[in-house]
Amino acid sequence: MTAAARVQRSFRRGFATYDDSALVQKAIARGLIRRLLRHAADARLTRVFETGYGTGQLTRLMLQRLPIETLHLNDLAAPPLPFAPQADYRPGDIETLALPPDLDLVISASMIQWIADPQGLIKRLCEAVRPGGWLALSGFGPDHFPELQTLGSQAAAPSLLSAAAMANLLPSGWTLQESGSRTRSLCFATPREVLRHLRDTGVNGRASRPWTRRDLDAFCHEYNARFGQSGRVPLTYQPAWLIARKA
Image (cartoon, rainbow, N blue to C red; front, side, top):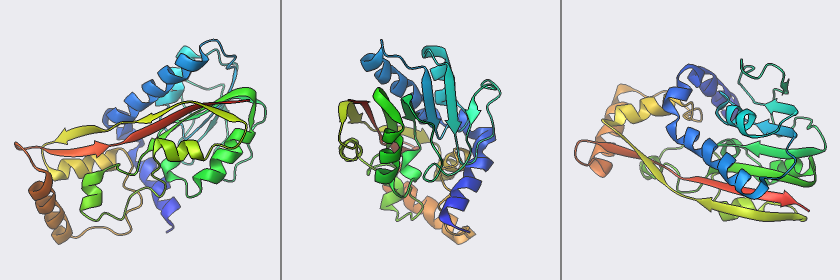
């Protein structure tokens, strides 16, 4: 099974538990909409394309806050959203998907880190935006999940980009309005709870093989030894984002 197929399977398995577990992703979606409206409060955002809609955390916020008339939705694995039955669903691999033209806004939260060629994708997304239109994008930076990186995990997403690195991928003719990043740690009772959180949010899909009991025990021991404090262990996220406008 390819890495992409494993990621797809992992997210499908996590749909039922995602919304209850993806606390950081919810905050990222809220922040992305807030930042977009800070710069584009008076913009005509009626034709919108979202890629990586998942369980619809960002989609729901857009429908509440933006004057959308035509909403195009793309995801590799997600089913249609019950609260957005009129959307134009375009399932499949965003790197090869035919994109609708003349968009007012292309938006995506917590997805681009899974793309093998983020520069190529950003170029394609930007080409689909009309002059004067907007791009709102978030992913995760190179210091995402440092605890797992320290322990030698090979399951990381392939394109962990800093805010500056994402901004540098914008094609000519675009003006960066805002970019930034921050870290946020969640605390868990045990390393096993960390692993359960990763499973419930679907982000462990690039793991190449199942663990043995010995693997699990060794991971938990090392995680506690390196990061445990006052009976708790952290997992640290590093979201990064940008808001840009086409000339």
